[in-house]
Length: 72
Image 1 (tube, helix red, strand yellow):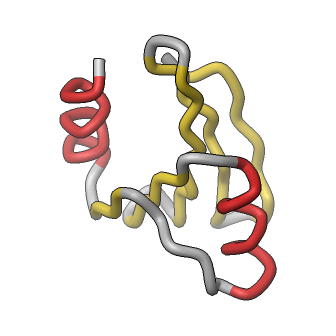
Image 2: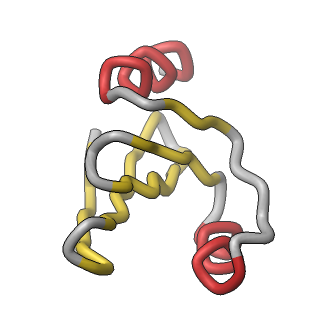
């Protein structure tokens, strides 16, 4: 379930997803490239210098939904 959404730039957004009691942070680049982070700190590090690793990466919303359905 999406509990938050914010545009960082016109082509980049961050979504906060809640699965059970865990929050996930989704970096959404133009709706064609998604990266999932387990913490806001990991996302922040990634946004600063692209050095942090993510826990999942995909190219479609369908793949992203499938990933989250597996976690539920």
